Image 1 (cartoon, one colour):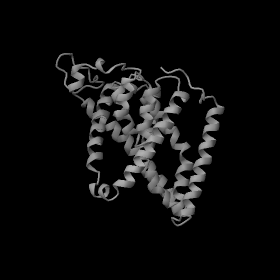
Image 2 (cartoon, rainbow, N blue to C red):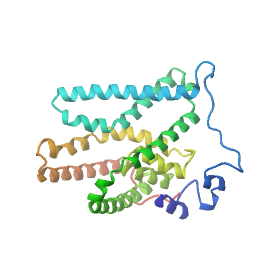
Image 3 (cartoon, rainbow, N blue to C red):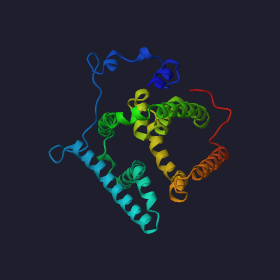
Image 4 (spheres, helix red, strand yellow):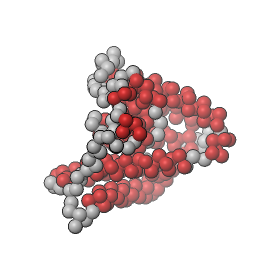
Length: 281
């Protein structure tokens, strides 16, 4: 949040120029003096089915497809003798769920049934899930572990956090043409957590998702799933082939470095990376 407040104060945000532009109702979290915003529209008749229940059912259907796809993938990997990668793919289920959601939306668009989805209701469901996510994440913190390893956690958080901020700040003003700060905030949340934590930070600067950053993040996560496959295999190398010896970690670091240089070279070659940096929005 300090990072977001800094961006707003220094007018790097595309939607919020100054802190005093935020109304008092937004500050206290309750609409008292201004009309409350519209939550969404009802695409279905309540006499037939509750529209919100249908949105939840659609989300559940996507996760059912995701579960089935991961189960098939895990079975195939185990049969191929690569069972050590199964847990890694399960931990990345949210990326596959995004791909499934895009596929379901494409089918609805192709069949002319996209009107069944209301973006307002879907945004509200996402808000509910994000709020529960925050509470669950805080509740899952083990204070016993933090007390035992507070110094390594503190050092890693400071060093890795500073490096992540510096690298993303440099990249976002050179790799994107618009909404640099919003993309910077979203990517910082994603790199230090998941896409869920990224959306939480983005919602502060773009509460109604007026910018394309959230949508781009969804598409980008799907693409990064395939671009990150080599990283997934390299992460498992020290455990599968070196019995957790230090040599395996050095080889993994070398692989990461080579892959990073390769990605930057390709990114630069296709013209998506401007080393001079465009003008700030």
